[in-house]
Image (cartoon, one colour):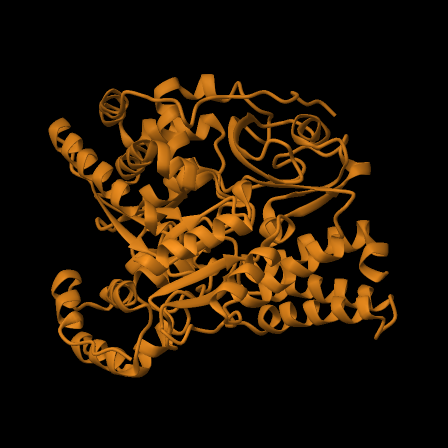
Length: 154
Length: 386
């Protein structure tokens, strides 16, 4: 859990307080904290003068606007057909083995969350994954280990 | 059947003098631009294939002075990645296409809706947008573009769901009519076009409709950027003249053992080997937003179908019952057939369900699930059952 502090105010200063600011504000919170807490969503509702149910209703529609606790780095491995054909399962196994978690779980140090996702538009360089917003393509088990190690050192 | 064969083209990624093309476009009247696009025969490159010139004509006819050009950069169809390459390499041409669209329909505002999965491109896209705005101002033209970002929802590529998302709501498609040309984003007349369509428009204005419509066939003018993936030695992004057969495509991109090509992604059609020679890639045969997936004989078409159905069951927005329940039941149904829990004739019931979804679903998602379902089940029945 994080304290949302002044972040919502900063984001509404930047994006405005109209209804169409809701997505950029929620996206801004997720960019910083990986997920939305109840406290953050209530704060957004107050700032935008809409009901908290509206905020939750919108957030819960979008895969990337998580309302459950997530790690600092959210790994999303593409599971759509080409990535599935080109070794996605092997990539997942390496990640599960290295991070000691299953898909959908977060490491105890809250550093990584492992997820699967639908087509991210890198089929010609499959298998592919996102770590937060960064894409990684043409993955091999060796490359995945290197990538995760580099994130552990950050 | 007449066709043109496989012919590589370089229009989309060609570097152009943007200022020169835009100066030319802004000297033309709205009617002249729309006429030029109509004559070019250009149909929307996102997949649905609505004639771009007509869309602009309808939007231009609206009296409301407050109109929008929206660029649909929510490329989410499995197997499609050509818009990402266009955004990465020639975003300036896309901005130019938006300004031309704005000039044609009488809009001063543009919005690019970029899928969240492509957010990593945003810093470079914003830099290019800054220089684009500066150039437009120098020419003395008034047009301003903003960005809106998606957050991982395939359905937001559906135009009215995309508007809902821009406005800050759940991405649930609206009832049509009214169509976007009369009531789009913020309820204002809107022309919503795909990334590639907008770049193509810029090239049509530069080259002239007469040059462009020499390419392709009567129903499918011009060229198209294809996203090639699957069992191919040369996956990637290729601009090809429209009008080739699947066989010609396979001759170029196949690995010598291609048994099926999925044209148009998960919502598209599966073409089996026996139909390669008589199926044209285009609006007279199998249309595509660019997604071309090749499968060789080592692949189980059951796995392909199951993967697509799993995709749709997750990505259905859940608003209308035929799609929400239909996607789940199709997925459960093929799994039951595979496990032998039901007789193979149950597949016929599932095909009927897919047909019902086509009629009863509110938007293109539910309406097109049956395309892949029917073409895979019909052509690879044994692989689904055994």
